[in-house]
Image (cartoon, rainbow, N blue to C red; front, side, top):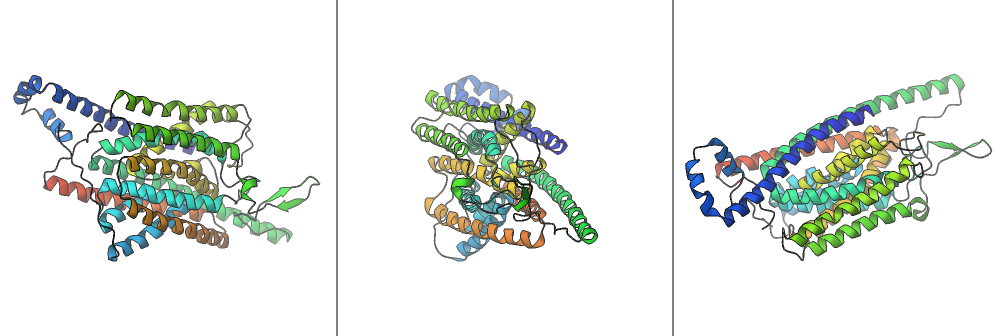
Length: 476
């Protein structure tokens, strides 16, 4: 739990930054309304305070009629841009799905620099591609079993505890995406992704060393006794005890009906449908009206209620988070609170930055001691629900062109399936599951460099053109 505690301190600081930006955005909206209702009351005060430095900062951050956002949707046609974008999108989805992070950090620069979308439209289309890759990956994993324990490779109890809170965070993140200026998103991207990629890389190094030691021990036992087995971290290597004391090899695959925990799956579907109903109904109301806010807050009891239901079952020992191989029968209250907090934060970051929640949850699962294959599969399963909800919300906000999105979803879907199969074979040959962690860390680091670099260039251009760079208005 030490690693998880360190992650918690880091992400708590990031949450404070996001909260500060969000609080500022609330005051922006209030200030705009105040200006509209009583401009004559503040006219004189503004004239007298024009030289004040704080007022200059405020005027930079928001203007009552200011907006720096205009969507740019290039016409869809066959050209070199679509070919290059398809290739980049294919490899991004393949590696992103293997690491359990979705690949949004690669998709967004590709969509903006190669095809020519504006950054916020690119964020929305990125979510569509993440959803396609996640659905394909989940379909691939539905029959697979845990590499060392007789259970599915997807930890349904862990997803049911965290994912409802993550979907709540997605709704918050999508709203913040509308409010925040591009430069704010760039700062958050660089800080968050560099920290997470570093943590994931260090975890990969530790796992690699552990695998090396296990291989040496297995080789030594084989040399001393002549009956040792080769070290295999992947499905097919582990064995289990039978009733008569003999051992049998665990199955690599079983039928979907046998492998899926249908009750937990049904509860996740219930949360998804409830959120979808809220979003569709909310789209029929005026922005920032009483009905609008009431519908938004209806998501809280749904997500908290389902997560609380699973938390009670885990606390009382009715269900177990067994994917890390530990023998504990229940989870402490403090641990569950931390897990749910990570879920909310992962959702906020995913909705705000257009990234899969796996960028946060994948490394967190690894810190819990969950094997890389299981961590990736579990994070992607949760990401399938959260990313599809983001797509619905962005669609209702008219944030992306449907034809382009459908084509790129198809590319990501095929790439994810191919990537899962190829990497599984590679890891089976090498005998090192740590390869998955290094793919995760590399994908996140590349995302940090590409997104951060693009954001900085875009920000410099806006400064040179004297464009508005403050908060947007959620209520327009």
